Image (tube, rainbow, N blue to C red; front, side, top):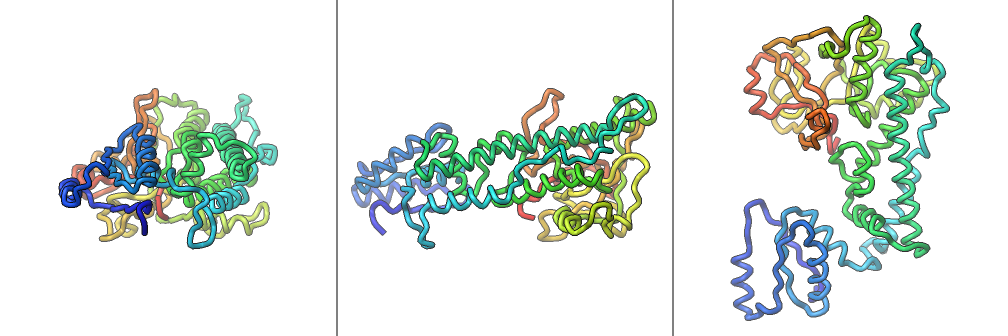
Amino acid sequence: MNSITPLIFILSNGSDPMNQFQKFIKEFNDIERVHILSLGQGQGPKAEKLIHEACKLGDWVFLQLQETNNLLSVILNVQPRTNTMSTGKTNDDMVYEQADSILKKLPEKINIEDARPDLFDTDSKGRIDSLTTVLTQEIDRFNKLLKIIKNSLKQLQKAIKGFIVMSEDLEGVYTAFLQNSVPEIWSSKSYPSLKPLGSWIKDLVLRCDFINTWMIRGKPLSFWISGFFFPQGFLTGILQNYARKYNYPIDHLTFHFNVLPYYRNQEEISIAISKLRLGEILEVDKMINKPKDGVLVHGLFMDGFRWDDKTMQITDSILGEMLSIMPIIHMKPEMDYIPDSNDYIAPLYKTAARAGVLSTTGMSTNFIVAVPLKTNKPQAYWIEMGASLLCECVNP
């Protein structure tokens, strides 16, 4: 411990140690060696400069924070990259190795040329299945994201080795890796997610595998709705197929949601499919009938409530259980469908943030669809509980 060793105190919400800190400084009659800064937007560079100067002089820097990440970013940015950790590795070593590990995990791309030919069969009017259009759009989105990630990782490795200059974007990737967070240049081109870096990469690999398996083996019995880059497009594709089949106006179609007594874990499904030969069917698929109209979906989580398999309706969460798994749902389009007034209209969000940017439709980009669910309690009760469906479990 010395004058340049940072001391970090993580305080509970509502704590304000400023008065005690000022009293401490007055007792030591050292007020001129104390620098106080409130960290807000754009204050990061000022904080870094203060810390650099304080490290040289042995001064104090008191940073008042709005977010813990602000502190982490500042502390990491002022630490020399050549510092050796307890593992004997420098920050450069760890970031380089992590970049290498991610590059090995990610697929090069999802090759549309490997798709089943029958996915592109047309109907009597020469139209391709709307879900095939959704699939090709998803492939394009994931390939663009994979390209951004891989290019930035390769550039980062070159910058660490000193072959190229470390740009601002690469600096952001470097710092994000040390924080185990998703770099901004990735997240800004990606789907909404609150996962830390390790879980985010694992999830991305699983999403790519889901799309690739669909492309090679054909439509799955149940779609992993949480694995879509843009799930709203998937829902539109389902409605469009139904409208074409029965010659209905698509603007009069809405979904009837029927919960089935089956559960499905996409990671387990992915592993099981990898062991199958082309044309073979999963054992779990043999238990479920393929719907005539609409689709089956899985991969949702219940926040603030859970599903009761005995009563086939929603009920209170188990004490201590943060999120529970939603069973498979049959989403069937119907003309001018009006849900039961006694149902709870549960909002389905992409992430637990429950907020997003307003789209051109006036809806939040984080909101997907409202799902009516059977209940024996009034809607007001579940609204007070904040009950909603989520596509993402941050720590599955």
